[in-house]
Length: 159
Ligand SMILES: Cc1cc2nc3c(=O)[nH]c(=O)nc-3n(C[C@H](O)[C@H](O)[C@H](O)COP(=O)(O)O)c2cc1C
Image (cartoon, rainbow, N blue to C red; front, side, top):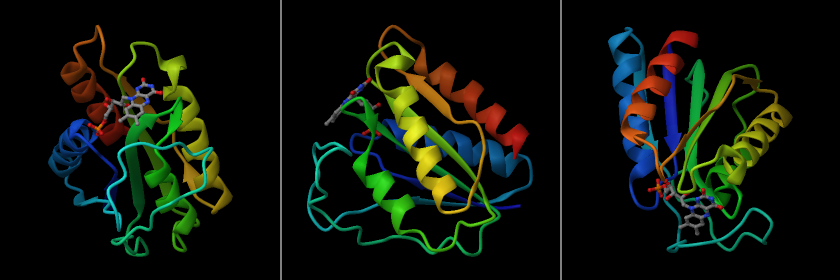
């Protein structure tokens, strides 16, 4: 399967998670591209509830992928506005599998993780994607590296 992992990561945590997912998927024989989203200006904070004040400069064409894994940090108790911009601007995810994943600072998934996965899932579903169950990795009080490994294995198994 041809897989595109598209990620927003400000400080590198979600990028690390993406790299672990990519490695697991490649081990299963899949072809994987990993693309880190870039914006036309630095975006250090923000919320999906605010008006967008940036543009994506490398919104990848996903038409060649069978599955798209979209990841980002939790921001302001929801999804990162940058990964939402990617999903909203996509013209080519209809009929494809889409699996959302997030990392978060707070320890409990109700502190933004679940809200982020829900918004990412609904946005992709609105574009006609076949949405798979998302993955949340919280950091505080967790061995989050181990959680990433476990989630990556589960992702590779359900694709
Ligand atoms: C602007 C901003 C808002 C954040 N809001 C939340 C939040 O609402 N809930 C949470 O658990 N973590 C929040 N965090 C923490 C990040 O989700 C967490 O550190 C994440 O792992 C960072 O991923 P990254 O290194 O890929 O950027 C926030 C971080 C930033 C910079």
